[in-house]
Image (tube, rainbow, N blue to C red; front, side, top):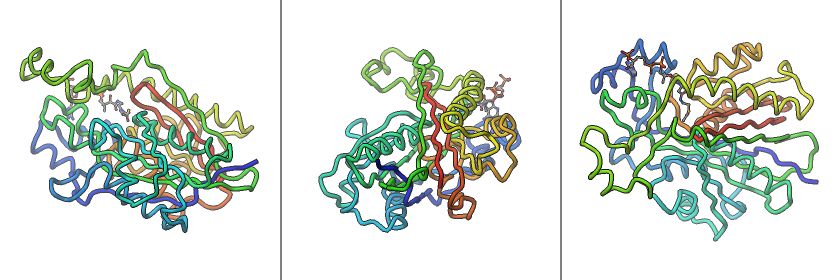
Length: 335
Ligand code: ACO
């Protein structure tokens, strides 16, 4: 019986820092509004010509994770790449990573579960390892949000929240019991697909159609978010799916050493922290610096928490996410 563990972590964010004040110069917003509603102070945006893209940032994070795992690219059996902002409509980012890292003809799987993308990807990696099929799986979450946001006052309700970056984890076979990824829990509710979505360009909203049918002011190729509806669903689903994971492993909230919630909004994380009666040292947040980086947010936060010595061997680490789909999930890990 195999178990799976995270053997290496890495992250990368573009150098270009965009503060709330920077945004207030290009749209009608302000630092106080953004901080009060979301906790965000600044985020990173790719700068034209800096060489970053969704897949190249993923490669940078992946190289660090592999080095820390003590593995070469030849030892990776599968790439799983999660993003909502791929470089191209198709193919996805996984094959680009495989090419850029000069890897063998290993499979590359793309995951499209937005903010829950990393948890979904981790869950797939975990299953492939536990069945004995693979030994090392490279899991990447990466987003280039800035390339597709409406950076005018019209888009301010969405665009101030999101940032660019990438995180990666190497998931490796282990034979130790009760260590590593204990369980993962995944859910979806497609009834709310449009509440947080980008409808076009797509086969339902193709470019010529969009241009023909929409006045210049109302082109639906920017993300739409029903913020308050998302918020209300997020706090309920985060709690449910964390409880589900704890119950399956016969654990209590008091057993959590570190909760790493998807960095959607600091207010959501604080709400969840309160519900589980966790203190500040038991929850890791870095949305203040990076904004919401969707599929990249958990691996960036996990990497940072680990680098800062906040996760030690034997700790119970809980990952949880909620986002567009709606999709949500959790992972219960004994480090
Ligand atoms: N700056 C200044 N004013 C703004 C901005 C902005 N950036 N954005 C909106 N406003 C204005 C609105 O126009 C509105 O003005 P009005 O009252 O004159 O009409 C007012 O601020 C309030 O707007 P609301 O949208 O009602 O503000 P709310 O308190 O709901 O906060 C927010 C918005 C922050 C988006 C909140 O709903 C939220 O966090 N929701 C959860 C969203 C989330 O976490 N998404 C990510 C999870 S999913 C994922 O990660 C993909």
